[in-house]
Length: 457
Image 1 (cartoon, helix red, strand yellow):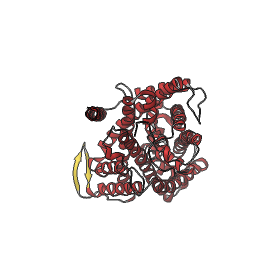
Image 2 (cartoon, one colour):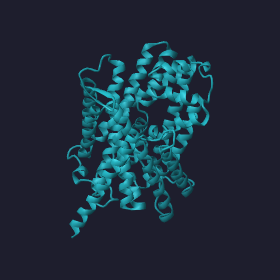
Image 3 (cartoon, one colour):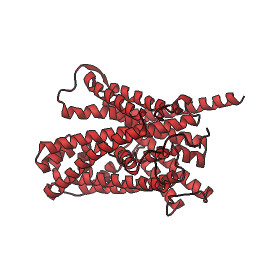
Image 4 (cartoon, one colour):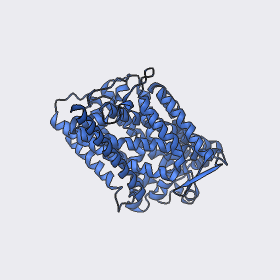
């Protein structure tokens, strides 16, 4: 199989399943755990403005994805586009970067789930194992994440349709809780809880803005599974943009709801601001618990979607000869890239044993790497618009090259937020993860070339 040829996956996903997978990937647990810090950092207006501006930048990037996914609806998304436009080396770098983002989030969810379960099951941590980076790891805590990882792996091996069904059901629960919370905040909240709409000027705004790339990673799972979507190709591009706009609306409304429901003092003392805000505006512990359950649902939707995206990125690289061939095999019964899925599953099973602190470092490194992939996709968009103007484009972006250039600049701008001197600069352990991943990728690339030269000798 050539590096740009499509695979042999089945087109089975409907429109609602695609939206559930993309939206669910972008809305995980953070809206429950971090919304209070967003409002405290920038004020309610500042937080909303950051998500609107950041979401606008992601829409620009999403437009390049939308056109390319509709034009080349094959498994692997970024790999296909960057290979056609920029060649095999760029395709390797682009897909390798996106894999780190997907796998880091998937692994983190194995830690996020037991962390959240502590809110539901007091005294969960028993039988201390060891300490990693100052974080104590307990056996009972780790087992929750490990067992859940096995379940998500099993679901994904059994087929994308089974995974999409799980995603759809859980996403509905998440949406119901979100609507309940925002409705309560609108009618029972008070603007008096917001002494200022915009806090700490540009610095507070930037502190929230840097969260956007991580919050919005997930729309790109649509291109990864494009070959499994049973819709007109133009619709694939449209759904990418719709999913991003849904996420912008979601995070903006959650920020509004938290700002209306809790005073700055209450936000300072709250561990789970969104859940506490729901309990406050409804005067009910049930409302608080409902939001926590929705947060758990968000963990599952994010986890499931990144399993799908990560496995297909690994699968297409293996089919291209850039990773071991075994990772490019499809299950004889379920027609899924089962070996790639199992590889991610194994990483998720062992992830809780490394504790939460190390996994936070991993996710931050993945947030930086995804911006690299976004930049290469935008560059591929520009190159193909110039070099192949007659290529069929079922979803054709108005503005063409100009949009691609703006998306590339947006990617560079988001990338600079992680560099030394920025408010969100990566710390040295995160740079070590980025460097280690780059070295591992370089070794894989060199071994692939050595193998190819040997085969042609």
